[in-house]
Image (cartoon, rainbow, N blue to C red; front, side, top):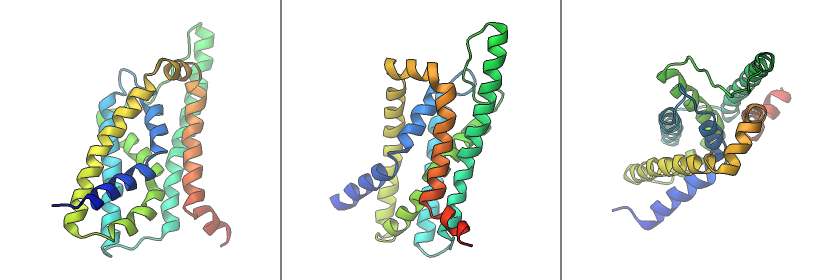
Amino acid sequence: MASVDVIISGIIAFASTNLDDMIVLMSLYSMRNSSFKTHHIVIGQYLGIGLLTCFSIIVAFGLLLFPEHWIGLLGLIPIFIGVHMFLNNFRNAKSSLVEGEKPVLKLHPRNSFLNNTFLVASITIANGGDNIGIYIPFFALYSLSQILVIVVIFSILIAVWCYIGFRLATLPIIKKAVEKYGGIVIPFVFIGIGIHVIISSGTWEHFLNR
């Protein structure tokens, strides 16, 4: 039976490294439409955090070596998405003004289930890429059985995180603000996340000094 220490450590490790992910979740939930749905976000979160966790466990057991500064290149993903969204929203806004319609925030309305889910997973991985530096030494402290317990804890907490993000995104004051300013603010949220990942992982400093 897992000790209380392992359970508490798992909760702290997840919560402390995914606080910024709550902003991403709120942004994604605010962007839902007829083709971008809640289950895309939830499954994408599980896939993204699951891959980050698996990668960290593998590295922790010494089966794979990957320079930390290369991880920061994942930050290019949300930057690209943010720029793409901003340009799309700008074009949609101009079109709506010409036609006399209210601008609507859209996220790849023609994408399939797999594409939307992969998009969320990519954002999650990019935003959590710097967390690998924390997860690797964390998992290295525990045995395989203890790691399995921590993985279960992570799985439960992902659902909790998704629910909290959903509830926050549907608060009237937040929902109204996103509907009014989301088309402008959300792309810059993703761009900011990408820049944060690149800088905090040491990638910028590494390539600048070469």
